[in-house]
Amino acid sequence: MTGGDAASSADEFWGWSCKAYAQGGAKRILLSLQDEREINVNALLWASWLAHNAQRLTPASATAAAHAVAAVSSRLTGPLRTARREAKYLAPSLYGDMKELELKLERFEQATILLAASTVRLNRSNQELGELMSDNLCLMLQAFAVVLPADEVSSLASILAGTPLTPRVADIGARA
Image (cartoon, rainbow, N blue to C red; front, side):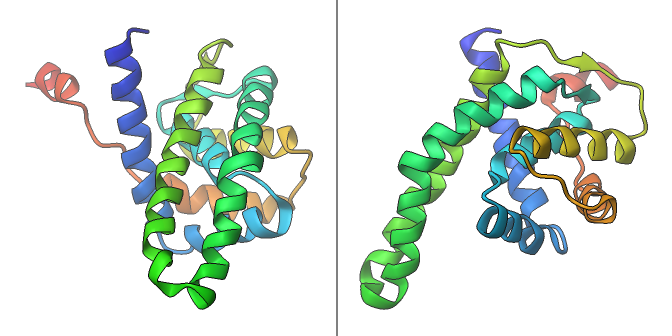
């Protein structure tokens, strides 16, 4: 993958993630998993994004992504998130700047996941989107040593499966 391809993938992943996060119910479920189970939202979004791209996670790719993002999250994003939440009430004038920085760190987390995952093989899949997404989410959850009831995973997969990919310019040109 070239630098331009990596930047394009990072931009596509970020754009899709912003849409997916805003889907009905996704934000609530993802934040609950983040706050109550310490699962990285970007890792779950990546697993879902891969499903949309017909790619199956492997245990190795899920573990690589989880370990890489945990380092960034525990040292940077998590502490800033805690401080931002406190600033909302203690230093409201700083809240907006802290939120903007947190979003930059979220984007950095996504780049970290993509870089870590570039070292392991992903598999193409012809599996139905909802099923593939559930499988990918389960593997990512396992990488964080979390098991959720099947209905919770299915609910999140169903919401995120409704987030379409934005066609790339090259793909649009190929269809014409």
